[in-house]
Amino acid sequence: MTDLPAPGAEADPSAQALADALPEIRSAKTRGWAFCALIVAVSAVLLILLSGVEGSFQWVIIILFMGGFGLVSIHAWVRKQHERAVMPVIARAFGLGYVKSPKDFYPTLPKNFIPQGGQRSVDDMMSGTVAGRSFRFAECKTETGGKNSSTLFQGLVLEVRASGSVPEFIIASEKETKGFLFFKGKVQVEGMELIRQSTGSDGQTYGLWSRPGGPRPMAGLDAFMDRIIALGPRVLGSATLYSLVSTGQYYYVSLRHKRDLYRIGGLFADETEVMSNVRMAARELGHPIELAAEILRAEEALLAAK
Image 1: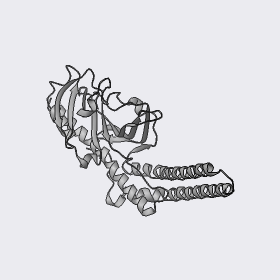
Image 2: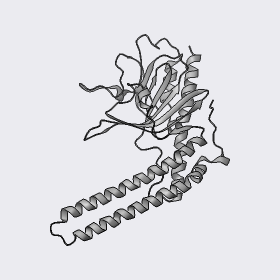
Image 3: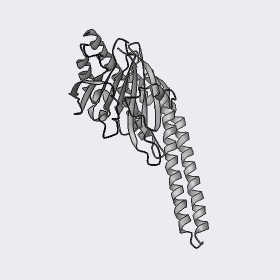
Image 4: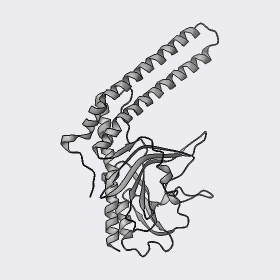
């Protein structure tokens, strides 16, 4: 089913990733601690200079705040450097291409299956092929933007090329399609009709929407929906299904989760902890690959039922 090489026991992607990236991991951590020492030294000198100055309490607070902010920023920078060093190696072990911050991912997504928001970010895009079909996935986050920005969607988005023989439809959590007063639902289903509802493995109610005159007569679509919403932790990991859109040419699947999937290392992480993070990232990486394969299996059954 898959064109991707499954790393065997003799080629542990976690161990290989850590071995290849270890020099850069150590270098980033050393530079991070050097920057921390510099911030602490500068802050200490400023505090000493202000110690005898009357009315300097406000400046002391500002210096402590700026110093703390600098240390937190350095920790985040070190983690990003560790991720940049490790993730391409893990991706290659699975036969995937890797782009840290792609610019062309969001513009190709349908406008109706995740909230658009005023601020969007995409990280860790990977691409490959399954059963001769191209697929790619990335971590996506949309926020309202502005001074009091809040998160509208955080999760993983998967794009899989379809056979071209399936109609347009949407499968989405019912609560995400419901609007409130003048506000629309986060998943847009305007101009579509609800064909069916069913409960998924996570206990949520999902709906199947299509264009009027669309896939209603298509046999096997109910089974396609049941198969997708029944996918559990073996395929989805710690994520939950948010929505699936078929455009006829591509399937787009959004999975919601509340944390970064590939958090690796950091200023205080030793090599044992980094290895644990790398192993976790490798396990998480297997889920969207398996999901792409499951979608194509469901499509195969759908087309066979026509």
